[in-house]
Image (cartoon, rainbow, N blue to C red; front, side, top):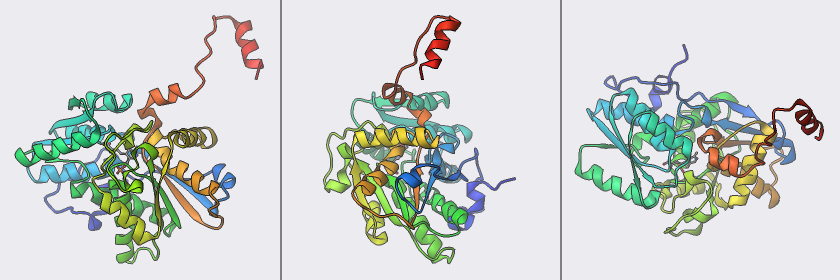
Length: 350
Ligand code: AN7
């Protein structure tokens, strides 16, 4: 049997003899070679890391399995997070697995339907506040200081520890670090985690080089790029609609130490990349996920030369999370009477 995340990378994780080894099949996600965009964007080699293949459909499961295992080890009976959706789905799943009470605080009306459905299905208590993610995070920080409820946002260091395993997998599969790693940036925990993963692997002698970290915020939520807190962040990519990233310094450290960049992409660029990924590669990522590819396209169009380079784009979550964005940005189904001739005519038009 395949080792689970807590077993496979145990030496790099805060796993003790007291830590429950829990799993619902997280990690070990596919790293697939680009079929078409690699050529169109003149890259040496382009790969997509499909984090939507995790059990709740996003990368959050890597960190959540560690955070929840440690919460159980530390005798907590309840966990809480603020979330734009994916963290809440993951917390709800691992909380259910471990029979914990799960509270999730989300921005009302701004979480994708699939994510809300997941948290509901797993039985979490969902509190939808009339404000944004940043306010929700501010509230849960205060609540966890007052009450014995474990915070499982990425402020919880175990989350970052778990998420760094994605870097290990990339190196283990490629046999080396890529030259560039493209990644969406919201609360900035993931870019922080990937950078930690690459540097820890290098320190352990498992890899010689580290990639340049290329992070992309949404233009309407580009706090780090603009170097200012965004009070009312806006973007179609609701997962990264975050105006005051908690791991801000982790992100700028990753950028500066790796010689990379943090830039932003517009909603149009995100939706364009979202469609290209689905229609040219057969990969249905959620809109926030497409920020990594949108960033690569932006740099390519600005004259960056990636020929002879090896690139990895992180596709952080499944497109099924957000059916509304899929439906609102595509041609609707053609409705027909149940008539063979009409159906045949419609098919032969193309
Ligand atoms: C698909 O679920 O913040 O920069 O509360 O769901 O580590 O925040 C999600 C973020 C990218 C950004 N892609 O990662 C949450 C949440 C997807 C995401 C990000 C998120 P971070």
